[in-house]
Image (cartoon, rainbow, N blue to C red; front, side, top):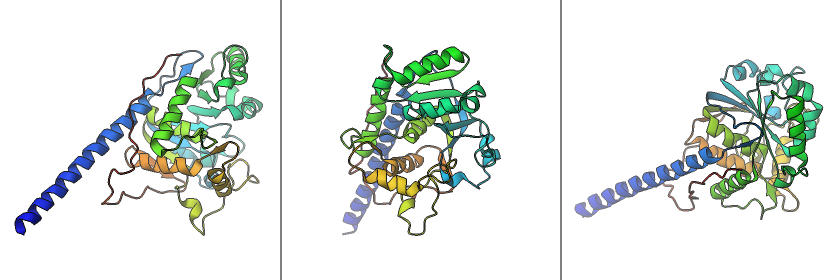
Amino acid sequence: MQCTCVEASAFVMFLHIIIQVFLLIYHCCIFSLFTSLLFSSINQPPRMHCQTCALVTSSGHLSGGSRGEEIDRAECVIRMNDAPTARGYARDVGRRTSLRVIAHSSMQRVLRSRHELLNASQDTVFIFWGPSSYMRRDGKGLVYNNLRLMNQVLPKLKVYIISWQKMLQFDELFKKETGKDRRISNSWLSTGWFTMTIALELCDRINVYGMVAPDFCREPQHHSVPYHYYEPRGPDECAMYISHERGRRGSHHRFITEKRVFAKWARTFDIHFYQPDWSPPPLPANQTLEGTVTAAPLVPQKT
């Protein structure tokens, strides 16, 4: 009986080692996905590497946090869409912007705020994403045409787009991480998905400001804040998240699903969440590889 117990203990230890090896291989494969998601540019591909990045969301959780100076101390500051830093917001969200990731749907708002976001941002890198129909280079791509014009008016502006080939790779990464095909589920990846993935390529450490935990909106006494800090009378953030997560008709974002992925990545990569401050819970000791989505490196395609 004693021998049997020893053998069983040795087998359990061996199985644990095998699981850890598979997890290591899995995480290495995921990282190779990040490093393969390169950009197609109007000029030259962006050359950036930052030891510490502040990834600033647009959440109402940032209001009143006075994190601006802390954010500006990061080597690189990453923002999304048309989120402003002027008009009294700097105390909470900072002033600097090294990289701004912008959705096709925010193009017009960015142009309306061009004096703040573009004219005063000669050192900022802008990365635009959108459906291939908006990025066509045959004169019919609405966003691409605007970017070409923007590049002519402000030739020193660093403007880039994510090519349709790379868009497919972002879709594939989402499917491998969640097991869900975003097109079949009538959903779009959010700007946050693109921004976090790009940040993993560029940054050694990522400090995320304003992003809630995946289960935050399930808490009965969760703090209600506007979806955008610069739209205090706008929709409630959790109401927006839940409606999009449950939506099946039309185009939606899977905000909560994406946050579950980000929490998982934070267990492997140097990602930290502030305002609100939280950390992903540790994995259960008895968790196995069952249900884990495996990934294989994607080969980047030139445009």
